[in-house]
Image (cartoon, rainbow, N blue to C red):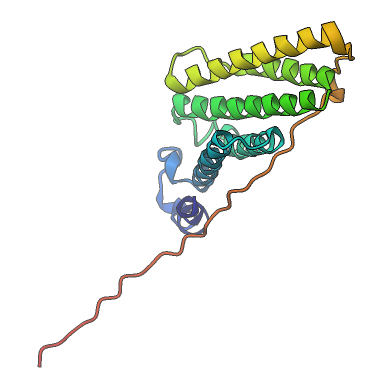
Length: 211
């Protein structure tokens, strides 16, 4: 992440006049900034996976996943704002990966938020959260088949099962109002991965002269 940030802010701005416009999107500052954000998202994803394996609280996991979603959203914003210009040659699979991973972590964040709400006997709120989450997930599901797309679809199926369970619980026992729109609780993100600045090292060779 630090290397991409260094390229984006220190190196590439000086080279823009030397590069043909639109031909090398990977050598533009905004794309390198987006790649830096993707590295941060991947780093937090690794930490979050370990937190899941160690059984951390639903509250923390919701915040961590939403933090990943925020990193990915910022990266996609840098890319999508230039899709008709200098970035029109970017791989659609790459862009689809960014959006699908963002949707996956947003979905997971809301799944854990619903678990937290259910544990607090706020089953109606939990149902509202998952209904909103699934509605958004359906809009984000790509048509092509791939490993990471399959992971997203599996997560969506798990969330649908949780929603059905909460709906049944609410209909039979809790009888709580299902919130809509702005009444629905929303996840809060927490970013715990920070960029480590890259400092280039210069190779200094000692010159020795024969006497």
